[in-house]
Amino acid sequence: MNIYNLFKVSLRAVANNKMRSFLSMLGIIIGVAAVIIMMAIGQGSKENIRKELSTMGTNLLSIRPGADMRGGVRQDPSSMQTLKPADYQRIMAEKKYVTNVSPEVTASGQVIYGNNNTNTTIYGESPEYLDIKLWTIEDGECFNEEDVHKAAKVAVVGKTIVDELFGDNIDPIGKVIRFKSIPLRIVGVLKSKGYNSWGMDQDNVIIAPYTTVMKRIAAQTFYSSIVCSAITEELSDAAIEELTQILRDSHKLKGDAEDDFTIRSQAEMMETMSTTMDTVTLILVVAAAFSLLVAGIGIMNIMLVSVTERTKEIGLRMSVGATGPVISLQFLIESVLISVTGGLLGIIVGCSASAALASAGMPSSVPAWSVYVSFLVCVFIGVLFGYIPAQKAANMDPIEAIRHE
Image 1 (spheres, rainbow, N blue to C red):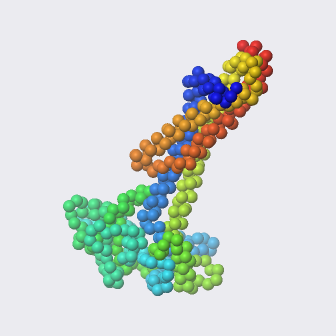
Image 2: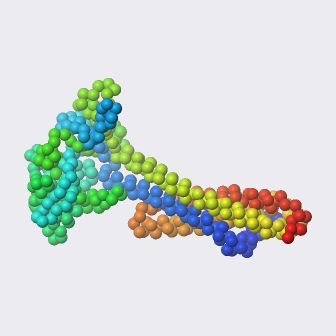
Image 3: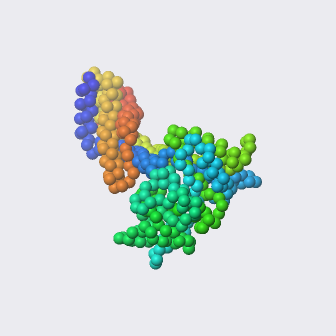
């Protein structure tokens, strides 16, 4: 009997037991759909995080106070005071692979205008900070170097600050707000960026000259961090090496002395987040894949029942010349038919569900390879779990099979 005739016989056998075949497929459908949805959510989340991080500049470099080892205990970086104005001046004088540089001093508290107030964070920066973080002024202008030199009481604010303090139809430019009793005149409003992947409102921000925040608000002589931008993303590693050497020289660190600062690139952060999301996605996919294992066992169980029910049919076919391999192939084809059909339906369900999640605003993107892998896995399951029933049918004695009641 040729393959075409075997396929027709197998298809007829599956069609004659529609409900049983569908229930066997159901496990495959659910398993494949679950795997695709998990992969889609993981891929979508990873792409969303990359997109969010890229909005802050792919060539961004961040220098933070190092976690010093004292008595075997690593200190809290926020308590370190290793970044000084002299470091900023030296970076500005010696940089080659770095373009924009901004010292950063931050403080959190309540900002007030009239009877309105809201909690926010103020960032003390240089005018170059907007270019580093890819901020755009929508209304007004940014403060300048003269404002930095004079520690002027001026600020640029985000949309959330405007909405919370002024409401609609009020131009905030020129208005004076108070942060921890320090008056600040608004000179510009930032273009809205909305919420990021971590649920943080990027528009709830005030940016002022770093000298103003250092002297008038935080009352400190050191920087919380220094943010820079490499000339290009490809030169980020060279820029890190350059900054490391400048700061080690500035801090007079000799030989194998541990750095008292930490430099991170945006590319490194993106890679770290991608690795984390890959791990989470893998865990979810493995959990979903167990349903495929259960579905495969279900197919094997149904095929064993089918072999038992069709014992007499198998005996008759053997008596008229069907060989063991032919009988075995027939049952393997039936098993693969059930598995692959369930897999195709599962792919349709999974892709449709992923598209629905994406339209609902949830990050979801189906990687093409997940569809191919799901299909191949279904073929593998059909062969693997159909083998034992197929061998049981092939090894039957024709005489005993015909006598079977």
